Length: 237
Image (cartoon, rainbow, N blue to C red; front, side, top):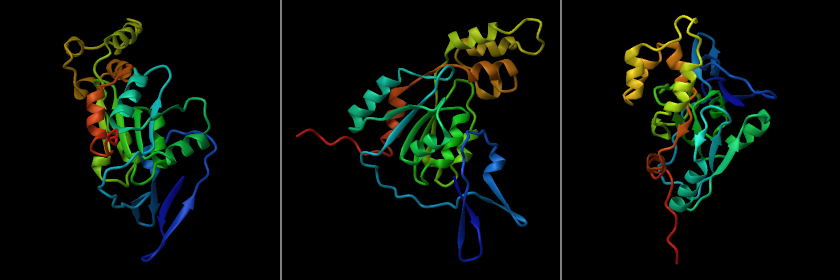
């Protein structure tokens, strides 16, 4: 990836770093430590406010946990509303070079929460992002990986509870393993669909099982966000 390094009062140097393997990076690693200062990898840029016409839209799918459920239906809904057909890609088992090329060519990305979102560093400075987060696991970690754009260019949606996955994960813990079980009030909040992130994250079992839920998509919410960025389909003649 490219990162900008301040080279003086009137210039920017670009240092190109080649990646041939996938990696998971801490937010702290995405900053350049200058002499006596710490600056973002890429300087802020002003992006045009106009709607995108037929942008290249990518939906990133996962395998195993945190899959985007019924993603083909969402693809169809987006095509009907905006006249574009999103590309659905799976990054597991692919090279970093392939992932970089996909991200660099994408103007809008819909992605499930996960380590793969470190790939946001490859996006164009004015790309738009919708991150789908598991119920009860609403963490803003990957927002910092795309630091160039104004806040409205990064939006998130929280998936509804996937009780089957959550409870299956919860029951898989051995009763002899101390500290893995949910407090009664946390479990009750989950079953009543009132669980909040501050309730869940301090408990290891809640954090683990919330993170591994499958992600059922709220189409209307996602389409509403996209309508703020993407021009509608042209009317049929």
